[in-house]
Image 1 (tube, one colour):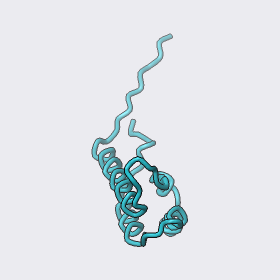
Image 2: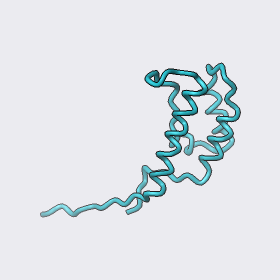
Image 3: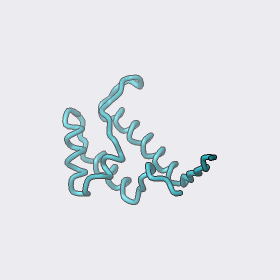
Length: 94
């Protein structure tokens, strides 16, 4: 018996939005923490943020960024606004 093929389609616009957002987060974290390029900062899992209710997203981000000496309020506000309307990419369209 032959196995059937499964084709998974990803929406390129959604993938590009994720990539753009991840690059923006990385750049902003480097600015906030003033790390050299090679040193990793705190890790922010965007999909994890989408799993929690909107009210808890800000609290979760504040918890992740609690050690940052720079003000993080603008970063958190901008990230939360960019997360609105973002779709998960782990469940591709079939």
